[in-house]
Length: 360
Image 1 (cartoon, rainbow, N blue to C red):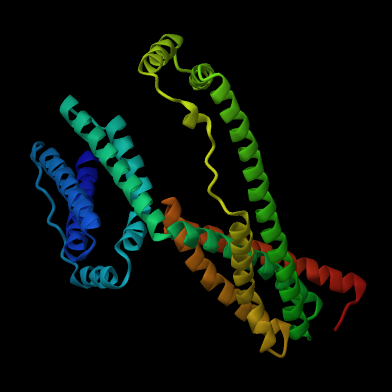
Image 2: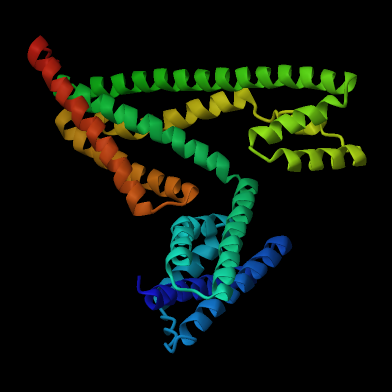
């Protein structure tokens, strides 16, 4: 590992984050968000100073920060038209890799004890930033966007495979292919929606029954909560001595532990079912649309694939953002998977047509 080269990369990354978070803090009107962004910007500046000292203390020069005016203007424009949390979520998609790089650097580089300690704090800071952005994204409703996109992805990939297979069977009747795709899509949406409804409702009923029993036990015998708490700690392999010390202290303070064992119930089964079905149905729209305008299934299929892949690229980008992985890698992964499904379905359709002589 070229530790100086890596340190220079880390420095440029941190100083870039500092500049951008400072800019976001300046244009954000929300007082609480402004304060937090300013705090995060200062932390990023502190991180960049660590890497600056790391480089110069070894006799090397700190790299100049490149001034890419066009890129800077692009991100500033997005910052004005997109919610800051959404924009940060996009930019933070590479943070998982950064954590791994920092961890690798910590384990493999020849560092002083001071540098090791400082780098550990940097890693903790970055993880805390991620937690903050995740909470803000939840407030903004990005979790609903995520669920919508994932549901749409299911419908898109499955119906793309369906219309690809039917195109091989009915090459001269694209309308029938499109109509069949819609029928399969509606059935799939209903199946997904009902499945989500039943799943969430069943889990809710299980949790309600558990909470009811737990509440009765706690009311009749409050001391039981401490025994249950000890069992829970043992399951996590906490030493018995530590468990006893913690439990005795809780008993002494008369801390009520009942809420620890009460399972939270916050999901709406009806909302979950409707949302899941709708998102799936939305994904169905893109692959089937070209078949209602073309005079041949073979003409419609390339447009269907192109449209589906374009939407998949967008879906993959959002999935990558929410999961903190490479956008390029996720786009390639999803496109390859969809291509495989479409190819296999089309091949199977040709086999069906050949053996059964279907021609419409």
